[in-house]
Each structure stands twice: as C-alpha cells, then as structure tokens.
Image 1 (cartoon, helix red, strand yellow):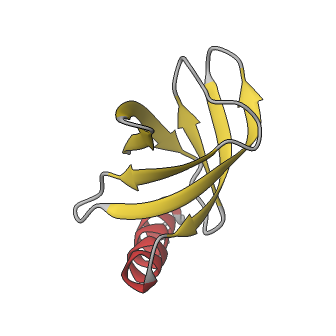
Image 2 (image 1 turned 30 degrees about the vertical axis):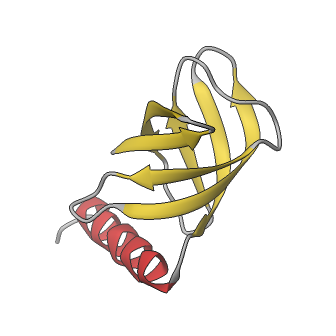
Length: 93
C-alpha cells in the first residue's frame, strides 16, 4: 500500500508492508532517523492518517515505524483494513 510521509513542507513517497495495529514497515530509499516523528497517510480506499515514530532502519531499504491513528475515524479504518488483509491471507478450507 502506498504511503505519503509529511516531513516539514515536503511530502515523501513510500510503500507500506507488514502492517499491524501498532506498526508498519515503509519501503523508502531514504529513511528518516531513529525516533524521528512524522505524520503519514496510508493511501487506502479511504486514506488513513497516522502518527509515526521511527523504531528501526534498514539503510537503503526503509524503516520500521510505530504507528498510532491520528483520530478515532483513523483507528476504526485501520482496524478494518487490518481485518480485511488478515482475511485475505487466511487459508481457505
């Protein structure tokens, strides 16, 4: 899923993977530094605003971030997105 990172007056692009209720890995060739705080938008069907803190860096690959929804709507959307993704990955009988 594509991600837009709001960094100062710039908007950086990335791609999210390994999303969970408290974390996300953002693929980006130029990750920020440890403990950097920023806002990001998951570009889902309905965009989801997240507050993020960098917790892990893989140079040249991306960064693992701790996430928290920006508001109650974002929390509900994030939970629905994760449920939707989980159901797609569940083995079918």
